[in-house]
Length: 385
Image (cartoon, rainbow, N blue to C red; front, side, top):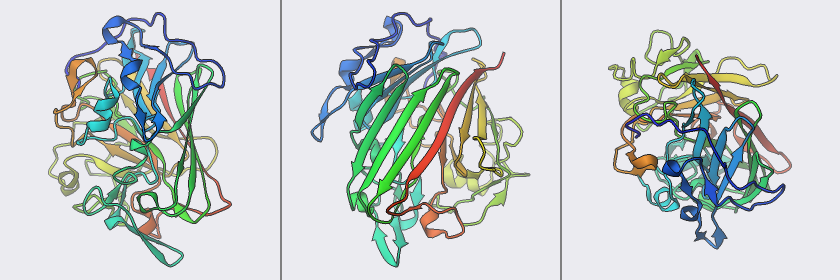
């Protein structure tokens, strides 16, 4: 996507301060006029609801900008090794581009009801089979044609640093049973983390697997193939030709999927391994190493080769989907007059496994009435000198 190194000057006049417990959006977004986001470009009425732009920040000048359309990350400014701010999130500077982009419709989005793929769009609960909308033939992907990435969340900004997004997904929406009440809270913490808290309840047994689908480039621009990455996983889930897991985890040792030691993303991406050819690169779920249930598991760490920005992914989830931007085509104009060129962004999605409802040996994603779905993940940003 981004073809040149983007380094922003230190933020001045960061945005209209958000009042406590209000959903009033900012009018001015970003630090310098060359890279300013126009909040008006994100204001529309969709399905009878108002879309807006919201800004979260901390005392370190870290700044996350979101829209309640799809619960999307629009920009994320973090300091690099020289103290300059870099926008590490790939995406668009207007709502229409998010709405109309069909090649990569998930830029920055909150994903639901079910992150990743469900084979042939079918699953069974309590002996009853449900048929989902097919949007990644022959499978259902990321909640369907109108998953959460295309809905307008109700938004409530809490102070300068947190945004609560809520949505009622009605019974049989996209084929999923149950009225599902969802709340997602994004928080920018004092120590340069983006905290993601997901919560849901239902009135009928259903399946839930929520995640965030931000596209990252830690250099702010250019290829991500020289980013160095570590993934805390000894095994991964091989997939068939439609990217559905075969059902059995296999070791990463001796394969291009071994990131147990920090390795550049591009070092083995063109290997002749059949799995890489299936997905045209990496688009696989990693089975995270043993998690004891205390604190948060370090799932992965990625370092931008030019900026020294390190992003750590921490989670309570059992899996992590690594996507290397295989289907980016360069057809879409993005922020800063760039395009979404092949492998100019990567995604690391914390999750339960793809197709879990049809694989009883996988961790369950079933949510029943009276239960509460709760999960938390973090994107943490540091600097490697």
